[in-house]
Image 1 (cartoon, protein in one colour):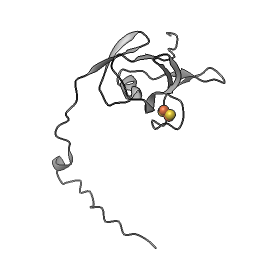
Image 2: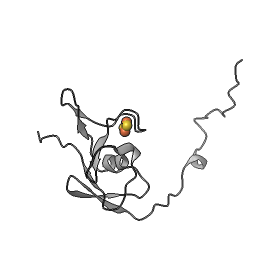
Image 3: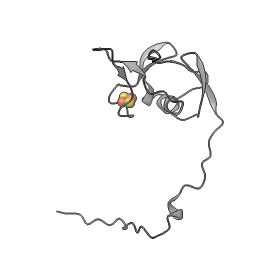
Length: 112
Ligand code: FES
């Protein structure tokens, strides 16, 4: 049995203002410590979101060849986003919500 697509067709000539988010209310920012550096985060976001917003791309080294690794799935499946949070190693940053004064340790590659 085939289902009929009932989604409205997108008309490239039609204005899309009605599809835009007009306002976002964010709670006041909090601070987290990453590798000893204080960065800003938004309550409710994941550690991964805060790290990504701050420019972190490499979060760990591979166990096999020691290669730099970064997040892949963003939903708790790949385990490529493991960091140390408040002294507890191997926490999935994409599945952990930020908390004020949280201490996070990532692998930092040596400078070029
Ligand atoms: S990014 Fe895949 S488990 Fe976190």
